[in-house]
Image 1 (spheres, rainbow, N blue to C red):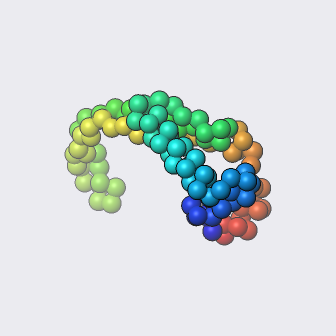
Image 2 (image 1 turned 135 degrees about the horizontal axis):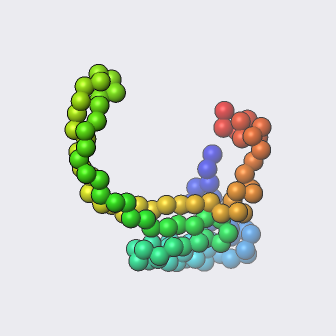
Image 3 (image 1 turned 30 degrees about the vertical axis):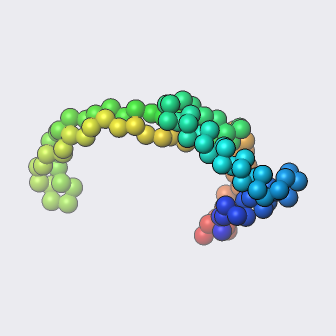
Length: 108
């Protein structure tokens, strides 16, 4: 079961000897900082764990295609350009991954 926000605050409070209120305020400040950075289309690295990056996805033109179920020709509509957020795990996160056997036991 994933950690809830309350459990995370309690755990960090124990680890850092800060009060739960102080930990909540640090997490709120971290949220605000991350949101501010990505709203300005800046990359954000959270320690050595994850990198958040804003990407621009180009618009697509309308094109001909086929319905895979019937094989009938159809027009695939155009899509406007969009902005996407990409999250990429960094070395520390990748190195912390469990073995295949442990993952199968836990996730199966």
